[in-house]
Length: 228
Image (cartoon, rainbow, N blue to C red):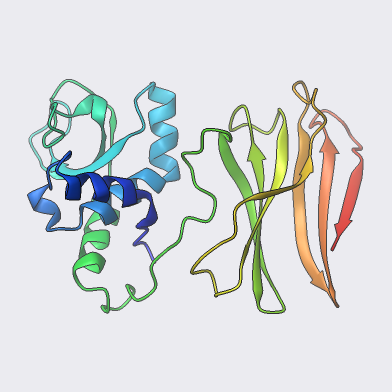
């Protein structure tokens, strides 16, 4: 489902506390819509590249130099001080004319087709210790869902230090254990690709994880197998 809501929990609390006014066009779905913006990989990446703040808010407003209102994820850089309207002086936003209306529709009618399962942000984007998580792998091991991903520490590219992160869910993905680092790069892994997650599979009673440690410039790189 596209209704990813977890990222807006803090903003919902602020709305309830009166620190941030509710946005009427969101029809009470501020947390769901702001949460979708907060967890949008493409929009957060665009904000990174443009040097914009990544506190994103779903607003129905115009683009820079335009007159047509659409649902967009606006950085606070692009909003008026009360966060209710586009300030007209910034390109720090992402236009989402399909995704955000669907999030609103699912929030208003959760039982509508395609809305019955709310998405869960397994590896959160806005993490102070991890630049971003990439290359996710999810499998089911005896009823427990295991989610693996590369935790890239310094940037989104392949190079640089990482650790292999693991989260577990015993209730079909509704809740998850905290991220565990099950394998780390050497501390000096700043000038080569470091570890790269290849695959995770269940073989009999074992979970087997394949990783490669090396560089794109190498024709042959060392590979390792982790077994449960």
